[in-house]
Picture 1 (cartoon, rainbow, N blue to C red):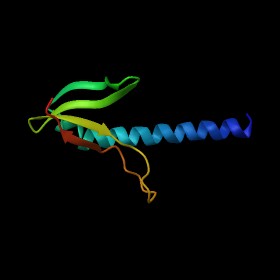
Picture 2: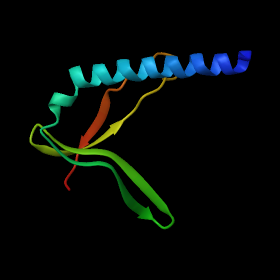
Picture 3: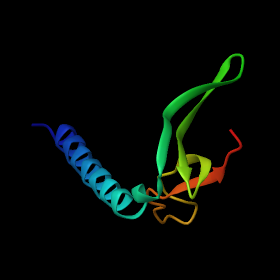
Picture 4: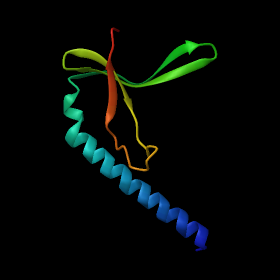
Length: 91
Protein backbone atom coordinates (compact mmCIF):
# COMPACT_ATOMS: atom_id res chain seq x y z
CA UNK A 1 0.00 0.00 0.00
CA UNK A 2 1.44 3.34 -0.94
CA UNK A 3 2.03 6.08 1.67
CA UNK A 4 -0.67 8.42 0.31
CA UNK A 5 -3.34 5.73 0.50
CA UNK A 6 -2.25 4.80 4.02
CA UNK A 7 -2.49 8.45 5.13
CA UNK A 8 -5.93 8.80 3.54
CA UNK A 9 -7.17 5.70 5.37
CA UNK A 10 -5.82 7.01 8.67
CA UNK A 11 -7.59 10.33 8.09
CA UNK A 12 -10.90 8.55 7.36
CA UNK A 13 -10.50 6.52 10.55
CA UNK A 14 -9.83 9.68 12.56
CA UNK A 15 -12.88 11.42 11.04
CA UNK A 16 -15.05 8.42 11.91
CA UNK A 17 -13.74 8.53 15.49
CA UNK A 18 -14.50 12.26 15.76
CA UNK A 19 -17.97 11.73 14.26
CA UNK A 20 -18.78 8.99 16.79
CA UNK A 21 -17.65 11.23 19.66
CA UNK A 22 -19.76 14.15 18.41
CA UNK A 23 -22.81 11.93 17.99
CA UNK A 24 -22.40 10.48 21.49
CA UNK A 25 -22.07 13.97 22.97
CA UNK A 26 -25.12 15.20 21.05
CA UNK A 27 -27.27 12.26 22.17
CA UNK A 28 -26.18 12.68 25.79
CA UNK A 29 -26.52 16.47 26.02
CA UNK A 30 -28.84 17.83 23.33
CA UNK A 31 -31.27 15.29 21.83
CA UNK A 32 -33.56 15.13 24.87
CA UNK A 33 -34.33 18.86 24.46
CA UNK A 34 -36.33 18.17 21.27
CA UNK A 35 -39.93 17.57 22.30
CA UNK A 36 -41.13 17.00 18.72
CA UNK A 37 -39.37 16.97 15.34
CA UNK A 38 -41.16 18.62 12.39
CA UNK A 39 -38.46 18.58 9.68
CA UNK A 40 -34.91 17.38 9.12
CA UNK A 41 -32.72 18.80 6.34
CA UNK A 42 -35.77 20.38 4.72
CA UNK A 43 -35.25 22.36 1.51
CA UNK A 44 -36.89 25.77 1.21
CA UNK A 45 -36.75 28.35 -1.59
CA UNK A 46 -34.95 31.60 -0.81
CA UNK A 47 -35.56 33.12 -4.22
CA UNK A 48 -34.66 31.80 -7.66
CA UNK A 49 -32.22 30.20 -8.17
CA UNK A 50 -31.30 29.80 -4.48
CA UNK A 51 -32.57 27.06 -2.20
CA UNK A 52 -31.66 26.74 1.47
CA UNK A 53 -31.67 23.75 3.79
CA UNK A 54 -33.05 23.85 7.32
CA UNK A 55 -31.08 21.44 9.51
CA UNK A 56 -33.93 20.81 11.92
CA UNK A 57 -37.29 22.27 12.92
CA UNK A 58 -38.31 21.07 16.36
CA UNK A 59 -40.39 21.92 19.38
CA UNK A 60 -38.08 23.12 22.18
CA UNK A 61 -39.53 24.36 25.47
CA UNK A 62 -42.93 24.63 23.81
CA UNK A 63 -41.68 26.80 20.91
CA UNK A 64 -41.32 25.77 17.27
CA UNK A 65 -37.59 26.33 16.71
CA UNK A 66 -35.19 26.36 13.77
CA UNK A 67 -31.99 24.52 14.72
CA UNK A 68 -28.76 24.94 12.76
CA UNK A 69 -25.98 22.50 13.60
CA UNK A 70 -22.47 23.91 13.43
CA UNK A 71 -19.38 21.76 13.65
CA UNK A 72 -15.87 22.84 12.94
CA UNK A 73 -13.10 24.98 14.25
CA UNK A 74 -13.56 28.59 15.25
CA UNK A 75 -11.12 31.44 14.53
CA UNK A 76 -9.07 30.53 17.61
CA UNK A 77 -8.62 26.90 16.62
CA UNK A 78 -10.79 25.25 19.25
CA UNK A 79 -13.49 22.80 18.28
CA UNK A 80 -17.05 24.01 18.54
CA UNK A 81 -18.50 20.49 18.79
CA UNK A 82 -22.02 19.57 17.78
CA UNK A 83 -23.93 22.02 19.91
CA UNK A 84 -26.84 23.38 17.92
CA UNK A 85 -27.66 27.04 17.61
CA UNK A 86 -31.34 27.79 17.57
CA UNK A 87 -33.78 30.61 17.36
CA UNK A 88 -37.50 30.54 18.04
CA UNK A 89 -39.63 30.50 14.91
CA UNK A 90 -43.05 31.90 14.33
CA UNK A 91 -43.77 29.23 11.71
